[in-house]
Image 1 (tube, rainbow, N blue to C red):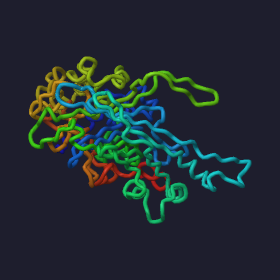
Image 2: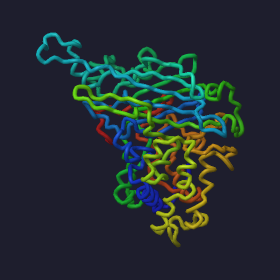
Image 3: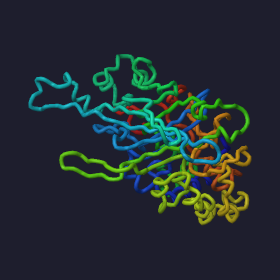
Image 4: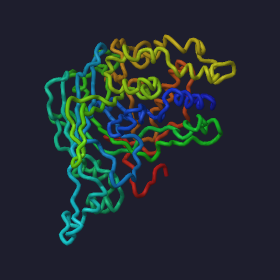
Length: 468
């Protein structure tokens, strides 16, 4: 990762994001007005990278989950269509592969207060209700948007990590076995499922949020501790997210053709993005919660980190979430070519003589417009060796080259070091990568797993309060 710039640049990183986004400076945590009111449909982060002979995709949803948030624990919504999209080749952003994930929750166990002599669940209703109803899901695969095929059905979702008593009584985890061992690592009880036809594996459930950022200092008028002389604090520390993880053979991701490792290859470069959609019409009932009707309408999406968060103006953030990456150039190209945060930085005096970005090439005048260099980087073009013509907010991955951002975004397995995409993108936007712009936080609060699904286990509600 790039060397750190002088401390004042950390304040710039925060100030520019604060002035542009007006919301949480995480990869995409409640970044738009409408999705901020619909957290179960909110994409938070997307990872995609080559791991051995597989493409790994981690699509995270539901921002800033407090681990102790009972009794109605965080979960995937039964009313949302979650999707992972894969475009293929340099000239199209249409889906070559689509994975649709739908969830279904069983009813909560019933407790009859007038007849406690014969409890329905053998006396376990209290713990079962606190731990939430069981949830399952299906995965449907589409090729070129057609021929939907169910490749997983009735797969279990890992439940919330409530605490040791729930683990023992409600989940019936044996003594000496951890939540992670029982639900992920041990073959007999793991919720990880194989995709039909030998096309990989899938996991769904809560995980530690692998993103890190000093949110508190950002919103205290950009008073980051790197500037004040203190220690930056990861305000995402201790929070969970809900993750849909796919592990797909490279041959499947590449359309049935074996991947050739080596130099940059447009033909085996893919574009990955994730989304969430709701039915167009909702009718509220007196006795039932609601009924949903009509076609699916996309309400959230994510490809590259921080695009909607830090680049798109607040007046267009909801529109961005509801549109397709293939239309990004027409709808939002001006935001990329003329990044607003450069003008914010100029206003704050950071490009003036003696300012922290005074040495950036061309100064503010040369960075405010015609930023084709940004398009080249996010598309892997130019010095990165590709000639991608289909431009949009997708995470590009050349399947034949070792993954490192912006060629994919990976989890540094077995460590607590994330790829510091915040530093990379801010340095690109504000200084053409000529000098690094740092936010001061670049380590996760937990060690990433060395095996699928790679994100660290979810924090336990009863023994760890948020951020402790």
